[in-house]
Image 1 (cartoon, chains in turn red, blue):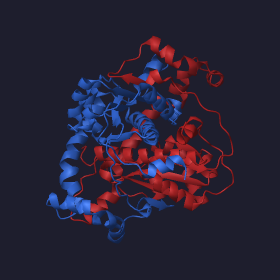
Image 2 (image 1 turned 180 degrees about the horizontal axis):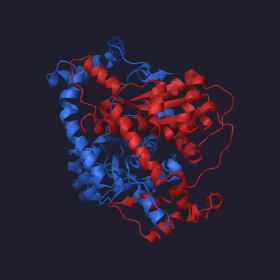
Image 3 (image 1 turned 120 degrees about the vertical axis):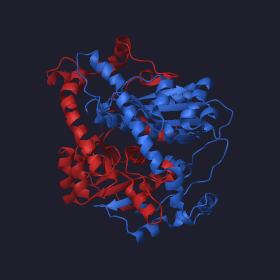
Image 4 (image 1 turned 90 degrees about the vertical axis):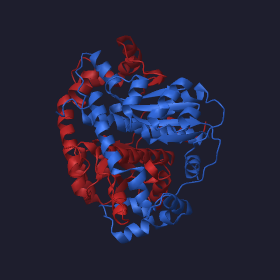
Length: 253
Length: 253
């Protein structure tokens, strides 16, 4: 088995970090390598804001619901969809940029996320530990204000990075057949759902999760507590408002 | 240097493929490994549709503006943001899913894109060649119809995959300082733009590109020909309409 596959098959999210620096040289080397990732028209529609300053981490923490990794990790990376740099380039070159729209946001977000994941794969192969914070798109305006992101820049992912101080267990995955379709999409019958989710639901940690939350099923933990309709709808409005403020919805009326 | 970094630093998009199969076993192994990628709440909010049938490739090709890789590659993968499977699971488990909104689309698209990039890194390390088709979000409705994607499933990326039949040159990258910011975002002055884009603009292939298109600057090739305001705005409306049809904008009025 090759090295990358080997490191991948053992990977898990790391939330506790040793009190040991991540040298800037190593970080630069990994960011340079991650930038080999393909992007739209080779425009590299992303930016990375590196946070090392502890006061800045303290300020960012509330936007991530106070998750302790943000202040504990030696490095926090906020990866942004960025059409600002390309737009500045166009304006300096007698070219009229038209990237203040939803498609352009999705193009830049795609570039940013693909870059992010190559970075994760490299860092984990190097023995670093990462926690990917999905909270980035929940309160993006706070992050924008703290990091001073201009229009056409939108944070889409945050990584906390450091040397692992724990060996977390591998988490379960759905079987391949549950997410791979051949030629056309095969929709999910209740029988297939039972087949695909049975293992996840049978795990002691998930049963425990259901129990301590006084729920009947694991799915209810997600719908009633972790990712509720009410939160999702409020956060969607928030996301739309922030995309509009950052200039990505200029032609949506 | 470790293997992954080594393969990354040499990677380039491959558009010509040898007449040689990609065994299903190898594909399954790579998809399984890619699924180690972290996802929101470990829900794996993605699906992959594998196209091997040549008639299906012919049907998909127009949605990708007839790019020859789609019909020439032994395998085409369409990676989708998928909240349908999770929603089916919730409905089978007395749970009320609330994932028909923009935030949920972005969450699922993020999972799908991160998964996609790990897959790319693995496949390229294995010696396979990939072309990432950004066209997926330009005419998503055609792809949805052909692959029979239900509501809450949205294609976000397409990969053509095969054994390379060419050795493409490495493409240029912007310098690290152009996309990495420390503590806060440093906006771009015309002087910085000159510094960061000078190398790209000086490359013979880019000068040639400007010349054959009868433009004054490289940026104009992007704004006037490749990614125009007019196209972006029309495609943004198209994207919004498709997101609405796929059920991801139920509460946006």
